[in-house]
Length: 170
Image (cartoon, rainbow, N blue to C red; front, side, top):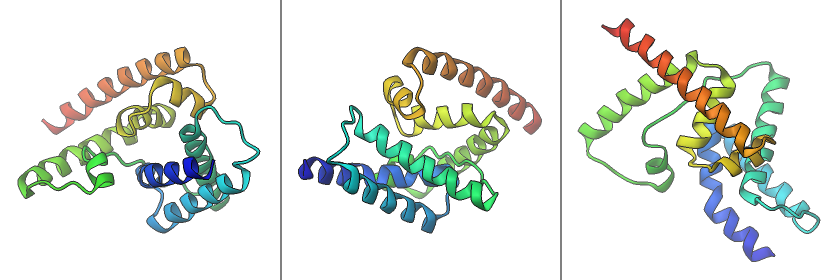
């Protein structure tokens, strides 16, 4: 069992950290939350029977993040980037592409900020973290069919907001 937790730590630590950062969590807080999440996993691992450990880890981390900021009464802005996995895996690209990706990221972030928060989070989970419908459902305590419906609505809202954003730039 320790080997699977160790493997999970190696594979998911950075992913959970970057997801928290995309939610707007400051660097130091994200590091603390991920450490706390894995500490909790180590303490509870023997007693847990979790079908989807990655979703469980994400749920614990996100809930901890929400609790922390609910107490502080501040929620930072969501953040999205087109280079999420490149950052997580340490990939490199040339400076022109980086500049274009930064501009696209800023535009995506601007549109996400205008969306319903739950829809924006769903889009981040699906397209930034590449979670399946089942994993998102496990994380948010929803049925996969409900996740599909909510993601459809989120995509519709994103398209509408993107058109509005695009028209204001002209």
